[in-house]
Length: 132
Image (cartoon, one colour):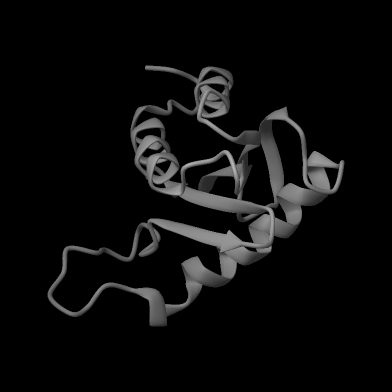
């Protein structure tokens, strides 16, 4: 089972990957980073992405429909995608046995990245991530 560094390096092997971070969305802290950051500051980017993640994770409007298997102990959101003119930001929530307050943030170039592949691979990485 890979740890944070191994998972981040795996994410960076995706076509178009510019940078990747593991973030604790409750505190906004970057637990690990690799590559570049959109604003040149991994910590500031982590804090800003955590605000977005926190908003989505705590908003019941994004919860699955009644009768689904979602439990209140984990976020109802799988991932978030933010696009701009030249890139995508994919935030993939990581399910953990304790509080599920971590997500992977991948910054992906729009012209050379594959958003569908990135979503699939980040999901696989998130399932294997072991937090220390």
